Length: 359
Image (cartoon, rainbow, N blue to C red):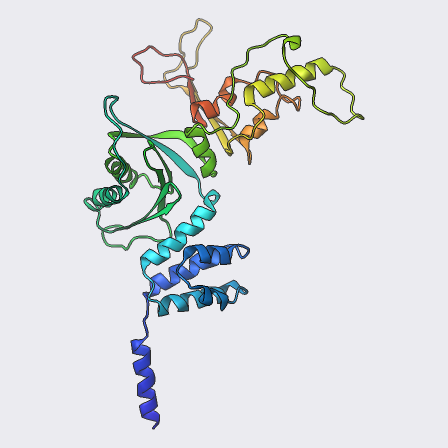
């Protein structure tokens, strides 16, 4: 009787669905990345597990939860598309874990705006990349009006690396795409796919990056609550100003000067919340010059000044009221949302036919 039972066990094991080991490991690692406080909500949004299955999960320890999810995936014969959907939900929930770059597309002025067909967009995007490289996996997922694209790149003799995918966020009928984790090698192929799928003719990377995807969208789509204004000094008596309530224990030696600083700060930055950026970089390139104004060396002097903060625009707005800087604040700092960039290159003034630019 024992051999018969053993044969039955073997048959059951052979008949049980088994997913690829690499896929199972990827799902396990993705689960381990999820914050324990949101893990159930993310699994619910994933939509792969039924409500009854979710209720049976052991939340702690997390590695046990991951193994239980993998077992469900084996029984339900999960695919790479299912795993990609879980990765989509995680990155959509926590986009600030990545640094996003902005790309702007354009077309001739006389071109008309084309009707956006989502199915055609996906088809053309895949076709463009697969025409050059077959060893790439591409998945799509919609979140509201935004289309998220996940691209895992492979080489000639290696499988696509699912642990280092490129993510693209594109909103239909806009010239902007938000990209994270793209290598210089894959960048041309991605850019080609973006312009072909959206029916544009050119694309360029803007000098604008941040961990806050929503802030980047607010800047390029002009959704800033309080638009920045140019500073035009006016006499205090001409302004409709109500001084802020201050601690009565604090005495200001020059209240009029404080009022002026507060006014200029509001006129420059507004009262509303500002887009969240973490850095502002300024690359200086200038020639060494003698007292006569002639260059003394052929190669220019180069340096980089970088400002960093969890919220660089709020930090800049606080400089003058804190007494750290005079008002008005330099336009190189206040123009960031208007110019839609936080990386600047400052050069000497050159002839019009020169390739160099100045700020």
